[in-house]
Image: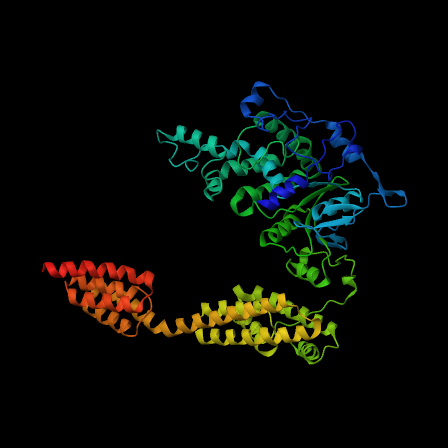
Length: 588
C-alpha cells in the first residue's frame, strides 16, 4: 500500500496542451487529483465528482484529435546533454522480442525508496527509465496494471454489469434478485463473481462476441463514448476516474492495433483475479508502435506474474518488452535472462558491462569437472576473486535448472541439489531448503536430517571462506548464525516427527477401527499413549470411547496421563473433563 501511494505521487503527468504535442512531457510529475482540461472538474470538498453531479452537468468529455495526430507526425526530437543540443532521428532500437537494457546511475541515499542522479535530476528508478526513453524520442506513461484495468472496464462495461445467475447470491429468477443486484453493484462497483472463474463461464458467449467485435470497430470511439457516458460511476477496476486523462487512455488504442488490444483484454477477462497483476511498469509509444518496459533497480526481482505477462505480450500480442534495469551486475542480468523461454529473447543483452561479448557458457544438469576446479581454487586460497565469481555463477545456474525440474523430474532435481550440498558444500539456503521439501514429499525423514547436518556444516564453512576473502562484518556473521540455528531447530522437529511416525500410523489405524471394533480401537490407542505420545488426539479419542462404554475409571486414568504428558494448553481440556467424569461417577 505504501509503495502504491508513493508511485501515485511520482508518476503524474502534466495536462497536455491540446494544440501542441511538443509541449507534452509525460514523465513530469503531476497530481492526478487536479482537474484535467478534458475531464469533469472534481468536487473541491471531496476531491471526487459523483456520478449524479457529472450527469446533472451533462458532461461531454471530448478529446482533441490533434493530440493523437500530432503524436504520429512528430518525426524528430532534440536530445539535450550538458554541452549542446543535437537533432536525432527516430531509430527504433528495440527488437520484437524480450530485450534487456542496463544502465549505471549514481544512487542517492534516502530514508525511503532509492533515488538516482540522472541528467542532473533526482529521480526514482521508474522516472529514470521514462527520462532515458524520452531522450530517445519515446512518449511514455507509467501504466503498470491500473491503466489496463481502465481500458478493460471501458471496453467491457456492459458485460461487467450484465445480469447473470452468478452475479448475486441468488439466481435471476429469485424475487429478490433485482434488489440484491442493485445493492451489490452500488456498494462494490462490480458483480459478486467479478473475481471468480464463473464470471467468464457465465458470460462466455457475450464475451467472445465482444472480443470479435472489438477487432473491427474504432476502439478510440468506443472508449471515448463509454468514458463520457459512465464517468464518475462506481466501477471496481477504475480506482479514480481522474487518475488517467481520456487523452492518455486513447494513446494505447491509437498506437496499438485492435488485435494487440484484444489480445491483452482476452487474458484479463478470462481470469481477472489471476491475471490482473504483472503488467509492465511503463508503456512507450514511438513510430506508430507500442512498447512495454519493466523497470528494475539493483535489488528488484521478477515475479512469476510479470514473467508470464511479458512472454504472453511478446508471443501473442507481438508487443516488444524491454527489461530496463539500473545498476544490475552481469550475474543478475544473466539470471533475468534465464527466466524466459529462449525463443522469446533477443540474444544480445545490451549492458554497460559488455556481457554479450562473453562466450555463452553451457553446463550439463549434473556438475562437471569445471566446477571442481573452480571450487578448489576458490576454497584453497584467497588469490582469485574471479574464481569465486565463476563458482557462484555455476552454482546459481544449477539451482535454476534444478528448480525447473522439480515438477517434471523431481529425482533429477534432487540429484543436482545433492551434488551442490554434499560434493561442493555450497553455503546457501536454497539447495538445502529445496532438498528438505522434496524429501518431505517422499517421506524420507532420515535424509532430511542429513540435509540439516550438511546445511549447518556448509553455512559455517561458507562463512569461513567468504570471511577469509571479504572480511565479513558482524551483521553478516549474525545472519549466518541465525540460519544455522534455523536448521538446528528443523533437525529437532524432524527427529521428533521420525520418532512419532510409527505412533501416528497407529492412530490412523485406531480411527478406522472405531466404527468396526471399539475394543480394538481402544487397545491401539492405549499402545500409543504408553509411549507418551505428545499430542492430544489419542487421549481425546480414548476418553470418548470409554464414555460410550461408561467406563469412568479408565476415562479418569486417561485424563491423568494426558495432564501429565501434554502441554498446559492441551492439558486444560482434560482437567475440566476430569471434573465432569468424577461427577458422573459419583452419581452412579
